[in-house]
Image 1 (cartoon, rainbow, N blue to C red):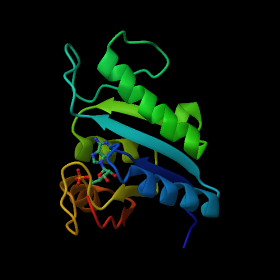
Image 2 (image 1 turned 30 degrees about the horizontal axis):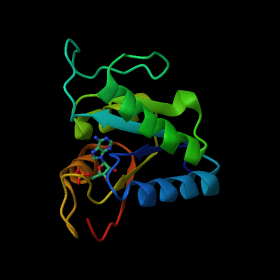
Image 3 (image 1 turned 90 degrees about the horizontal axis):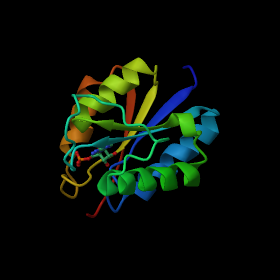
Image 4 (image 1 turned 60 degrees about the vertical axis):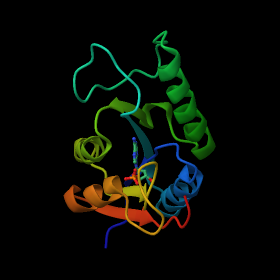
Length: 147
Ligand code: AMP
């Protein structure tokens, strides 16, 4: 079995994101793998953008809601010590964008929570479920008990 070389953490900023993030960091350290982080924006209106837009983290959009989302990604990125270039915010549908991104970036392990903002306790959330089905690489769903 080959070691993981590039791990993708998918964060939705739900209350259990830290647990999922810590597990991804631990795995990246154990495997000495590169760690990328993705947050898919599906909950704020984005006028005049096409599907699958990558949002620049370097430029100020002048849009408060978007800047607040960026700040959360920066905080998690800093906590995990992920390179600036490995922090991604993409506009679209989480389950689709996570799988597409993983293919494009040659990710070999995706780490998601078993549920998030849309999931129920003890059930696999729809994003985790879909990523498990459609990803071309390994997927680790971190069991989250409450929320
Ligand atoms: P859910 O399907 O909403 O229950 O979410 C399950 C897991 O999918 C979460 O714990 C995250 O790891 C991931 N996820 C859900 N929504 C997003 C999102 N907007 N961006 C990135 N990852 C997400």
